[in-house]
Length: 336
Ligand code: TRP
Image (tube, protein in one colour):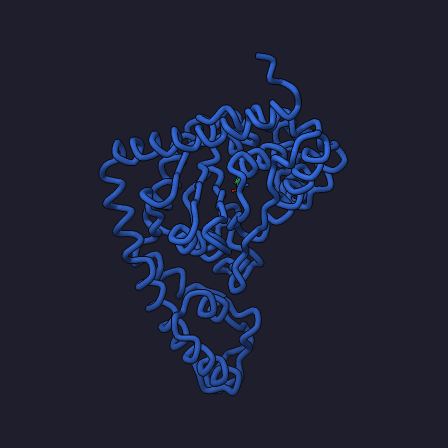
C-alpha cells in the first residue's frame, strides 16, 4: 500500500455496528486513514434494496453508523464520510454498469446467493437487491478506489466490481478509465464468531456485542460466552479451537505471548474458564470504554455530525461527478 492508494468502503445503514465489524474492517479503516485518502460511504440506498417501507430505520441508522465511525476513531479531518443517496452520480454510473453484468452472473454472486437464502426470497427478489453489486461497483469505481477494507463476506462484491471494470475499459476506445480494486481483509478475526459460538457475529442471529455496549452488557456477554462444552472441571484438558473466548482473545488481546501461554495451559488442563474469561473481559472493557465514551460525546450534538456529513457528501460528490463525466465521454455521451 502507498500514499497513492485510494480507499472506498462503507456500510449499509440498517443497524449499529458491532465487534465483528470492528475486527473485520473498522480497525483497518482507522489505520488506513493516516496513510491514504479514504472515503466512507453510509449506504442508505443499498440498505433500501431490501428495506422498502422501513424508511425510518434506514434514515436513523445513517446517524448511528456515522457515530460508530467517529467513536472508533475515524477522523473527519482525514476521512471523507458521506451519504450514498445524496450522490446521484453513483446511481447514474450503476445504471450503465447494469448493462455489463448478466442476470445469471448476479445470481451466482455467492454473497447475493447467501442473502437471498437468508431472507427466504426464492425467486421473488426485489430487482434492486439482485443488482446491488452493480451499484456497489459504482460506489467503488466512482472514487477510483484501489483498496476496499471490508469483511470477508464482501470479497465477491469486489470480484464482480473488477469484472465490470475490465469490461467497461475493454468496451471503450479511450485509455482505461476505471481502476481495479483489492479487498483488504484482516488476517486475524476475519470472521469473528458470535458470542454463542455460531460461525459469524450477526445481528439477525442475535449473538452480537455492539460497539456501544455498556460495561454490564460486556460482562454478561463474556459470562455467557461459549467455551469448550467438554471442559467440565478446571483440571480437565480443554479445547482451544472453536472456543469463542480464545477466538476473541486472538482478535482483541494486545499481549500475544500471554494468549499463547493461556492456550498451552488450557490444553494441558488446570486452567478454568473463569480465568480466561477474566482476561477477555478486561481487554474488552478497556477497548470499548473509550469508544463508548466518544460515541456519547458525539451523540450529544447530532447537528454537528450532520454538518460534517454534509461537508463530506459535497466533497464525495465532486469526485464522483468527475468519474461519471469521464465514463460518459468515453461512451460518446458528451454531445456539447
Ligand atoms: N455491501 C456493504 C454492506 O453490506 C456496504 C457497501 C455499499 C460497501 N457500497 C460499498 C462496502 C462499497 C464497500 C464498498 O455493508
